[in-house]
Amino acid sequence: MQGLEALAEEDDRIMLVCADSLKAMRADPFLEKFPDRVVELGIAEQNAAGVSAGLALGGLIPYFATYAGFITMRACEQIRTFIAYPNLDVKMVGINGGLAAGEREGVSHQFFEDLAIMRSIPNITVLVPADAGQARQAAKAAAEIPGPVYIRLGSGRDPVIFDDKQPFVPGKIHILEQRGNDLVFFCNGLMIPRVLVASALLEAKGIACTVVEVHTLKPLDTEAIVELLKDCRAAVTAEDHNIIGGLGSAIMECAAEHCPVPVARIGLRDVFPGSGHPEALLDFYGMSVNDIVEAAISTINRKPNPLPNEE
Image (cartoon, rainbow, N blue to C red; front, side, top):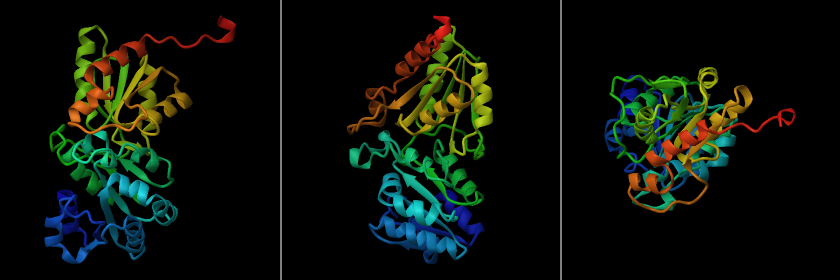
C-alpha cells in the first residue's frame, strides 16, 4: 500500500476498491489519508469489478485489491467482459498468490491458478514483483501502463530479495547473474533465492548457469528470452504456481515457437497442496533447491528425439 499511497499523493485520479479486504491489504493508512477515494464493497468481488470499470470509464484509475483467487476466479467473467474487453484502465492487485502464501488458511486461500487465468485474457498486463520493494514500484509502474494490469503479490510476509534501489521495469526480463550458458533459469517470486543457491551448487559441479527473473509474464520479453535460449543447452523454470499456464508454460511456448531447447518446469504439479510453513511447502511439493539442481542436470542431459531419417 505504500506505493499506492505515494502514487495517490501525486495523482488525484487514484482510487482504491476493496471487497472486504481493507485489513488484508493493510490499507488503513490509505483510508485515513484518502477517505473519499476508497470504495469498500464487502464480500462482493463481482460487484467490485463492475464498480472499478465504472470508475475507469469516469476517468479515474481504480486499484481493485483483494485476494488473488477472489479477483481471478470469483470475478473472472466480469474482469473479462467489463474490464479487459473494453480495455479499461483498471489495476488489479491480488494478494496471497502462490501455494506458500496460504499457510494460515489452507487450500481455500492458496491461489496457484491466478497467473494462468489472467495470462489467457486479452489486454491484461501481468506483473509478478518479487518482494515488498518491487511491489511498491510495480504499483506505481502500473499507473503508467495503458489498460488493465494484474499485480500478483504474496502474503506480505515474504522475504526481501532485492535492494530498494533495484528498478522494476515492466516488460523486460531481469538478468540476476551470468555464470555461463550451459543452462538458463527463468524464475520469479519466492523461487528466486532458491534458484540462486541452485546455480551456485551447479557451478561447483562444473555447470555454468544464467539466472533470469521474469516479473512480467505478459507481455513476455520474447526477444530477450529467445536470445538467451539460443545460447544455452537447456532451460529450467521455477515458480510458486501451477506448472500449467504460468511462467513454465510461457517459456515453453516461447521456446517451441522460436528456439526449441529442452525445458523443465519446477512448480506445483497440478495438485491441491496442503497447509504448512512456506519453506516446508515448497520443499514438500518438489520445489526444493535439490529438486532444482536435479532438474537442471537431467534437462541438460536430455537428448532430443531423433528425426525419422536419423534413426
